[in-house]
Image (tube, rainbow, N blue to C red; front, side, top):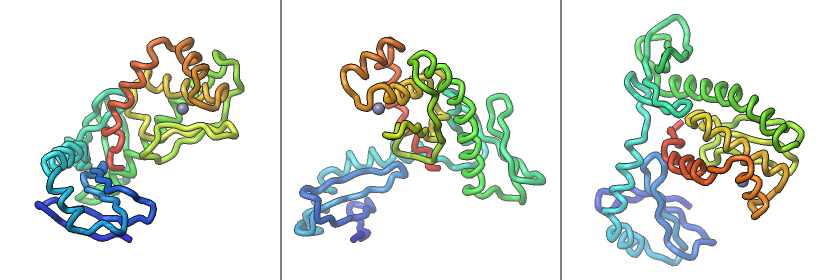
Length: 232
Ligand SMILES: [Zn+2]
């Protein structure tokens, strides 16, 4: 059961869960506050928790909102590790193109709808990830001496990549924000799961063998987590 509330001018969504044992408060990627709590805890008790953490919450909300896209001209996107500027112009049909370091969106009609622009950006990201992952798969398949696996690019917000038990790889279209080294590491990581289907010592040793600074690269990817929300 979900209910909406507001305390100390912070709006929040409260979800009651039979399985929750504690009150948990999270600021989501779009800057909204989500609270999970067991049924037995009163709203007053929950709001006391929010009030006592209001400074931290406000800071987290404004940090998240800084990463919100407007999908207007001047908005910027990480694209292959570099920051590209969005440019909108009116034209005969909806399309997107990469021109120098700009994402140029052509839209039908006077106003560009945010959802239309978002869809075009997503399509471009998806195609770009597909094109960049393909050669990396063949490279790492040779080096790891495994068969090149099938893969797809998905609209995932929570994971950069994954490897199924059947050996199928998935990458998020948001991987397009990564630079070449980061993307190569990610492909290596998922492909190393074809050798070790876990995060064991052997798995990490394999990563270290093929990419010695992998820990540093992994940390740089984690640091981009906020940006990866992209509010697509
Ligand atoms: Zn993994």
